[in-house]
Image 1 (tube, one colour):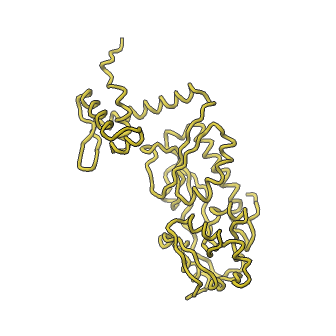
Image 2 (cartoon, one colour):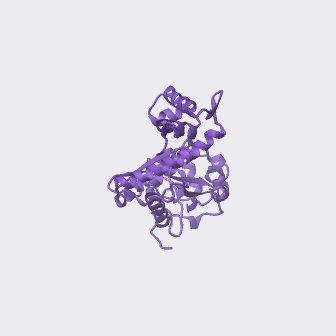
Length: 327
């Protein structure tokens, strides 16, 4: 007969696992809907039951001891197995949760508008989107899928490229139809307000001065400049007719197809070549989540949507939505 005394108090393991994963009693408390002191007491009780310290408690920091690291590894594996078993026992009719992290602009401009398609095809999957420009640890924060914007050599091992990007000016159709302020050549930008992403200096292909100089326009005196701290805010302003922005294709493909944005300049009439984007959007999975059916379905759907969107990856001609093309 198994001796229950050989096991640690199992009710305390959830608090320990969350605290060890976050290396924070406060974050663990938030995840478990407990107080910070309650999680701290759970960990202390577990340490007393095992007879060893599981954490090194430093000023404003927690570190796992060797024993804590061993217990975290086993506890995480056990809890993952229990979650998977629970899903199977409950059956496919009960919704499963899929957590996704990505940057704000991709979520608001590309992903969220397409999610109804995935939900329609997978009604038993509840998707949770965490949009943040800060990198997160997928395992620690229990994230299943990540979509990252980075250079190819910075993409994690096993990441799948969704698409790169081309940059071109975009504006609202109403602005393009304004005969008092023509917008047929880059020089015509002097009649308009230029919208800026405040973070574009780190990405020169998204900087107006770089784009203008590449097309032979120097010292342009325009109607004004407006800066934004987030790219999706800038695009919203462009769609509302507040000015001209540097758009990223195919990130904005849905807005262009719907006619909310247009590209005023035909690429064939422009002189010079702007700097090419060195980054792309990649998708990858948390290793232990990769084999789950709903995770596979979501990644396959993302790839299919990006393939359908990109086609030949040709930016739209002046004032027109991009037509569908086949690869």
